[in-house]
Structures are given as C-alpha cells and as structure tokens.
Image (cartoon, rainbow, N blue to C red):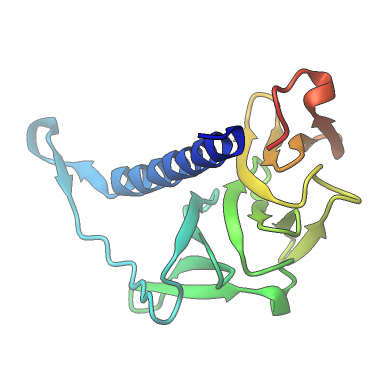
Length: 189
C-alpha cells in the first residue's frame, strides 16, 4: 500500500472516530438518572428526515445553550431548537446564509459560543453574532480542506487539521498561527 493510501486510510479512520465520538456524546446526553443510580434511557425525538435535511451527516457538536449543530456532506449545517410543541425543529444554514460552501466536514463550538465549520475546499466559516464569516487560506487556516476542528478550553484556541498542516486560532488575541512540516510535522495531509 502506498504512503498516500495509508494517509487517506488514516484520515478516514480519524474522521470516523471523531464522528463516532460525537454520536456517543449525543447518546450519553439522553441518559438520565434512574432508580438507585441506574441510568435510564429516555426517548430522543430529533425529527431528523434524511430525505429533507441530509442523508450524510459528517460532524456534530453542541453549543453552549445545548442546541445540536449537524454538519452534512452537501446540505450545509442544521441547528436544532425546541419548537413550541416541545419537539425538535431544524434551521438550515447554507451558502445563502453566508456559509462558504455546503460541504461541512468538521464542526466545533468555542468558549465564546461561536460555531466553527470546516469545509472541503473553502477553509472555515464561523457563526458569530447571528451571521457567518468566511476564512480561507488568505486570511484563515493554512489549507483549504479542513479535516477536523477542536476547541482547546485551557488555551482558548481552535485547532484545525488541514491539507497543508495545522492551524491554531487564538480566540482571545484573534491571531492565526500555522504549524507545517518545516516546524516538525511529519507531513501536511
């Protein structure tokens, strides 16, 4: 197997683990205490319609208010909210709303409550103050393809794994910094 095949396989495995972790967190969020400390599973009715919203979910995160944000392969981002009837309602965020593109492969919420969306070919979009802001390789992450996002609460920073290396955004200072092969990474992608 070639090196690029191994890298692709490793990238797929990491993406699967991140997605599985998000689903595990979602599952754990529906567990509530039962009798004698035994957990009891309650019904989770999220009203997700793969025909309407998206068939391919790529990433998940919860914001500070507890709402679920869902990244999809070709339908942008969907955000949950409690409807008047107590059920879940979904709001779509797409390119018409300011999202850089509808292919969202990574999603995270930072300490200020901003939602970060990593794209297939347009860097990241950040939802802050009720609108989306786009950051591409000219003014944001090092690469245009963002494989994964993670918020570091101790460092108050968002980390981005891209096709050209790692990018760190310092939330307090508003500074982008990059780590590449020249800095000791074994490879960029």
